[in-house]
Length: 246
Image (cartoon, rainbow, N blue to C red; front, side, top):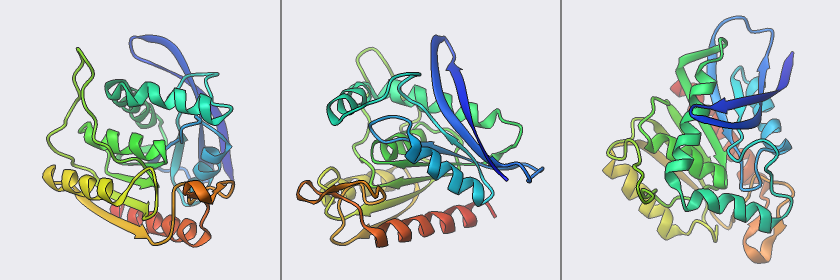
C-alpha cells in the first residue's frame, strides 16, 4: 500500500523548519532507491505529492522537498516569483538547501544510500541540476522543463564541486520553452560536456514550458500542457532510473 506522510525537517546550523512529504510502498521491506522531488516556483504542493506517489508505485522511496520553509508558499505568480528569486540571487543558499534535503533523504532506513536520484519541474529542474553540480554522490538527476543557467557564487560565499559532475543527467525539454531557449539548452550541454557528465537531452517540438502540468493553459505566453510530452517524458524518466539502478 502506498503511504504518504507529512515530514517536518530542519537543517544544520539553522532553526528554520521545512515541511515536505514522503511517499513509499509499505509492503516493501528491503532497501530501495530514494528520489527527491523538487518543486516548481510556488513551493511544495499537491503536484509534487502526486509525483512522489507515482514514484512510490514504481518501488521508489520519494521525498517531495520544501526549499522555502514551513508556511512559505506562493499563492499567486508574483509571490511565487519573489520566493524563487531569493534563490536565483543566492545559488549558494540553493545548493545548501538541496544538499540538506539530499542528506535527509539518505537518513531514512528504507533508502539504499548507494541508489539515489532527483527529479524537478521548472524551478525544481534547476534545483536538481544544482545538486548534481555540487558534487554530491547522487546517481541520477532528471529535469522536466527546467531552468538551465549555471550557478555563480554569491558575494562572500563559495559554491561546492563546480569542476566535475559525477551524476547521470536527463534533460526533458520543450523546444519552444520561453524560459529555457534553445541557446540556453546548448549552453547547458556545453557545461555538462566540460564537466564530464553523462548526459542526454530529449527535446519536444512545438512544446513550451510547464508541459507536465495539466493546469498550465497560457499558450500565448509559452506555458501550456502537452499530453504527449508529459507521458513520454515520464516514461523516459522511468527507463533512465531503471537502467541506472540495475
